[in-house]
Structures are given as structure tokens and as C-alpha cells.
Length: 354
Image 1 (spheres, rainbow, N blue to C red):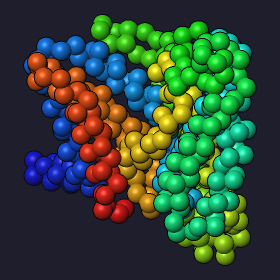
Image 2: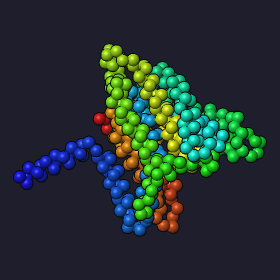
Image 3: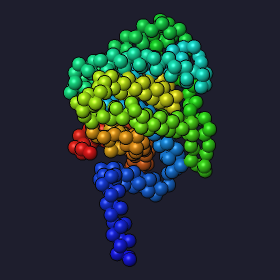
Image 4: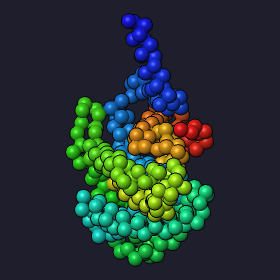
């Protein structure tokens, strides 16, 4: 009897190992070791966990945007900056009218979504013309639109004195504060504390809402069609599915989520950053979903959630723990660059195919 139970436990552990994968086990183990080290160093564990929850929530929708392009066969959306630009236009337009609280937040989304749909459609049409090279072309598209929008930010007809350069009275500032409008509206909504742990309830619920919506979408007829197009376009076309239309839908949905994601990020961060700030916004999102276990062949909402937790928690925890452990030496920026870019490099070169 004991041998049978032991054999069953071993089988279950092997299945969990096969599903979770060695790389994620290593990252999770490293994360646990950092928490143990933080406890030994008598750091505020509650504050570290609170910061991690905020970071996961504020980046989660950006990671989720990768799911749709992977599902429809376009690959990783390295042109995420297209959606981010739409979100930034919505954000600064809402700020220009000094709309406060949730009114300003949802106004920014309402303005950004139609712009994201239009840009996503154009972006999808471009990707249709470069089949097989979508990820490389998407990278250049993202860089190009960020550079081009630098001209727009300088020439944009916004008039709010808190947003424009004081000298000359024209052009948006590089960094705009949201204190007067809708900073942390999601973070503070239904937020509560448990001892030293602060839970940003509204932020996590907003991310969870989009995760559930995505989960339901991929169980709909359109979602199944998108999975089929991503897995086998020839078979999907022979089944009567509009392959081009489904791929276009995937790119548009990814672009829209990028626009909403950057607005959520900005309200949590408390600032809107313009000009070249969105230049590399796609890489952390790409790394997160790959570290979560997604591949070009298979990606799920679970991979999004797991990847966002592993990548952003590790990035949040590692810096203060490293700084405390090496007291007297300020290497926080060096450590941040090594850890963030190291994980991105690992994710992008991962040879796993599932």
C-alpha cells in the first residue's frame, strides 16, 4: 500500500515537473531564496510583497496583449509600441481636460481604443505583406512609430499649462504627473491592508477581469478559429475560416490591449512618460510570457499570469535585497540592468518547444 502511494506521488511530481518545466522551477527557487534572504536581513517582507503585487498588476495587461498575436500565428508582438502610443494619446488628451479620478481614467481608455483599432488595422495589413518576418518587422515598426511620435508630442495642440513646456508655451513635457487627475485610481480602489501587506485590490481585479475575458474569448467560436489559424493556417482555410481576417483580429486585439495596458501602467506609476520612453516597452512583456511557459506554438492565459508573477516579482524583489546585502555599495542600477536584460535574453533564446 505504501509503495503504491509513493509511486503515485512520484508520478504526480513528474507530471508537475513536466508541465512547469525546469527553467521556471529554477526561477521560482531563486525567487524563494531571495525572500528567505530578505527575511534573514530583516527586511520588510510585507512591503516587498506589496510592491510585487503592484508591479504584476500594472504590467499584466501588457503581457496579456502578447497572447493574441501568438494565438493567431503572427508571433510575439514586438510592435507593442503601436498600441502603447495609442494609449499615450488617450492619456494626454484626458489629462488636457483635467478629468479627475475614474472619469479621467476611463475617458483615456475611451479615446485610446478607437485609435488603437485604427492603428492595429494598419499594422495588421503591414504584417500580412511580410508573412514569416512579422516579429522582425514589428520591432522596426515599434521603433519607427516612437520616433515619429516625438514630432507629434512637440507639435501637439495641447494647452494645459501643467503639461506643456513653460518656455515657449508649446510642446508636451517629457514626463507628466498624474497627481491632479487619475493617479493610482485602480490601486486605491477597494485597497486594504493585512498587517504590513497592502493589497491593490482594484488593480488586481482589473487585470483579472481582462484575463477572464480572454479565457472566455478563446472558448468562443472566434477564439477556436484563432487557435486553428495559428496552429495550421492551410487547414483553417480549407475549413472555411477567413485566415487573413482572424490574423487581423488578433493583431487589433493585441494593439488595443497594449493601449489599455499602458494607461493602467501610467495610473499605477503616477506619471505618463513620452518621447523615447516607450521604445523598449515590448521586451519585458515578451520575456514575461515566454518565462511563463508560452511558445510560438502554444500560449494560454495561465502562461500570462505565471510569467507576469515570476518576471516582475523577481525584478521587484531582487534589487532591494541585493542593495541591502551589499550595504555600502550602490549597484542598484547595475543589478537592475543585469537581471532584467538577463531574463529577457534567456526568454528570447529559450529553445523549448511545446
